[in-house]
Length: 119
Image (cartoon, rainbow, N blue to C red; front, side, top):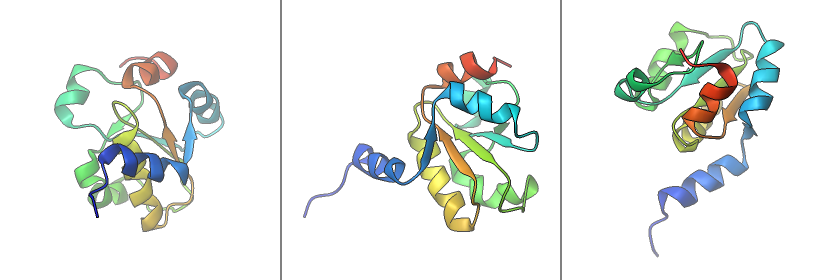
């Protein structure tokens, strides 16, 4: 038996998630004033460039820190990272925690910034 690669794991994970284009996310966010947009990249990456209105909760601490922002399982949560991989894995973790409205903005960080604006 061989090990599965990260791209294989991410692709399998994404298949079971709600994934959006940045444009679709922007449209949905317009109707969701209480939504959270979470950037799961590391702080150093976020320091270089960041989309407007995002919260930085790196994937490694997401499950520990999300209760500081919401404990409502129905809060709309939109996740993004540099390419969509970490966001997909983070979305899976939030769904395991019980969050029901989790979406992955499945694109590059630059595309997220184009759609939501740069901070």
